[in-house]
Length: 139
Picture: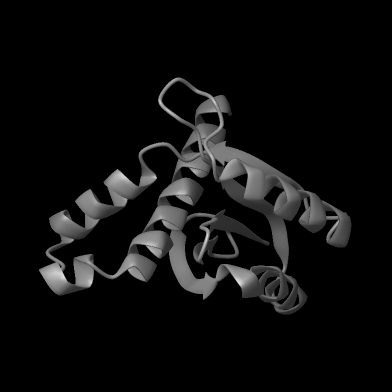
């Protein structure tokens, strides 16, 4: 079963998934946030998903950021619509910075680095990878 990660944004949302063995996190796509719920429901109908990890936006002092007021209702709806799939929050501080750095390190051109959808997808991948690494440290 796969893990699915969501980097929730006001306009666009990045999505990442693991392979079925949950070894590798890969960017899947970016969707318009208004279409996110339908996308997730469709995806879990087609692919077995064990858990959904949603980026938890926090400020430097650890308090929730402004976007959390949009994320909480979304997470609550997902939990009602998909009661058999746990939905967790994972600290997403610095994911955008890490996404930009990953793009620079990989040699992606300047124009591609300005593609906000790509940044969102990479951010979702970083959230998923971070969650997986935290799980491995606990084991």
